[in-house]
Length: 70
Image (cartoon, rainbow, N blue to C red; front, side, top):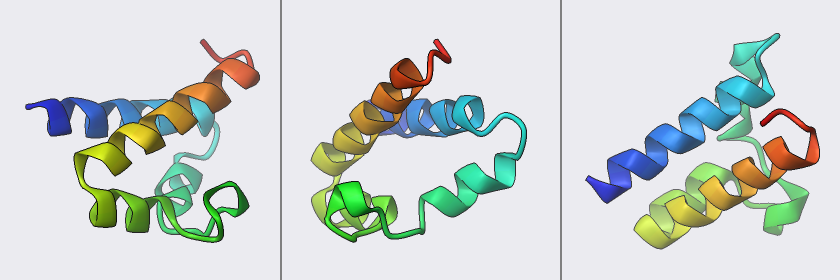
């Protein structure tokens, strides 16, 4: 249940960040990110499991706060 809750939070956060072009949120998950050492968010979530999912959730929520989208 915790895994699903965190994944849903990532999904909703990306929808919020990319409200004008939701396909960008879908693409973000599989695009290498410099802030993640060149890895994709999906790689981190798959490799680290719940720990990685929580890390990606924190990063998405941080971006929302930084952009004033809360």
